[in-house]
Length: 85
Figure 1 (tube, rainbow, N blue to C red):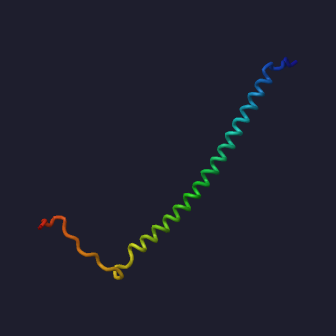
Figure 2 (cartoon, helix red, strand yellow; figure 1 turned 90 degrees about the horizontal axis):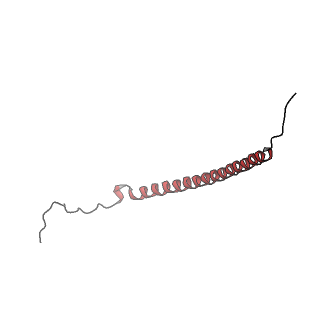
């Protein structure tokens, strides 16, 4: 014969478990929300990086054009040349 008795703290333990479940479900939802936000920020950063690379390529194309189309810069005095008044 089984000697089974109802646990007097059963209701309290059950409430504690339900509270714990609700707490972890909320943490999961928060984590999912943060994950989506981070993924969105990563996508924005990738777009900005792509635009930055395009701008950099354009700057290089403009600054490093073929030397034959530009006039040479005048010579600059040497930093070691003596000063003459």
